[in-house]
Figure (cartoon, helix red, strand yellow):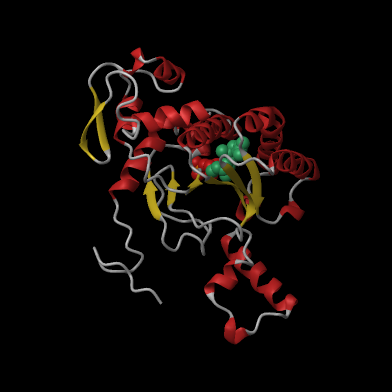
Length: 302
Ligand code: FPP
């Protein structure tokens, strides 16, 4: 993984002058290579991840690796439709969705993204048929059993947000097991939103504040309030990705996405691949984030 970050760093142009055929800059965020970077032993490692000459490689070359979002949040949608298009049971869409989870987690970890939040089960998802619900939980449990070593190897920390008390005990046990095995790791933090609802999160925060009784209402500000949310220790998402083309936020991180850049793709979640992560990053890097201020003028400090 460390080697990988180095490779991407080199690809970003910051490693100019290292090795043969170094990049010639055409603008700060764009670099082009004269000779094939794959002649360099360091770049040999890229072969397993990004195929030379592929669309992925062309996209990766345009990314400015010094301007990556710190936190990406994803509404993984379209599993059911993906399956229906193929005349398959809906659970097959979720199974294929788990593969997309794996690839997205790996891509974000290798890119050096610090936080990735995945909307895996909303409070509203309990309205689905029982069979689909139980198979979804089983899929998550299997994923955790299979992926734990890979997470540790890649220094990935697992966290959860949502109302954990209502999820099946066996799944909770796995989440706690993998959560404590990975809690000290300092690579990517993957946050699974499970039995999650943005409105419930806000109500839960208000309940905790009232119960505590040590917050003076006159002094309650946004920063204090956000310390009572499930995401107290996590920065707000810079980029929100939604698949399947729906133009909704679906009760996801309602407080935290106030200033997130939103990227929507028509691709169904099971078809979401590394190249879509790259496309989202490139689009994100074209945006100017003003946070309500005026273009080109920094906000006056308070
Ligand atoms: C939305 O698609 C997806 C979900 C409700 C579940 C997401 C679950 C996974 C991706 C698989 C397992 C997760 C992990 C973390 C291993 P939908 O069923 O609402 O699709 P539709 O709108 O087309 O019906």
